Image: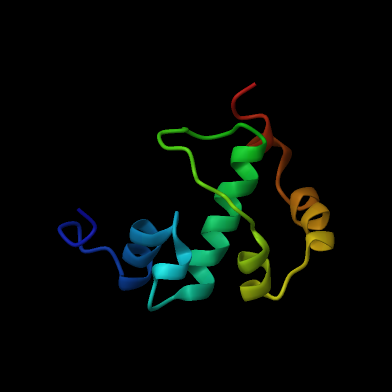
Length: 88
């Protein structure tokens, strides 16, 4: 569908690999960022839960992005409140 709609290569990679970022070949940072955002939003029960993500550890995601678990509260604090309240 992304190809048919002529989405950019970067967006196509995100769509294809946002549940398994380690499988992407290009645009790795963008795919990992979307994956992390998806994990955080799932934690706050936002968005559609069409398929449960199998999350063993986000350690490899944080490592790839140069982040630590200590950075997560700051990321959450930077997320607009209306995103978190989307499904309340």
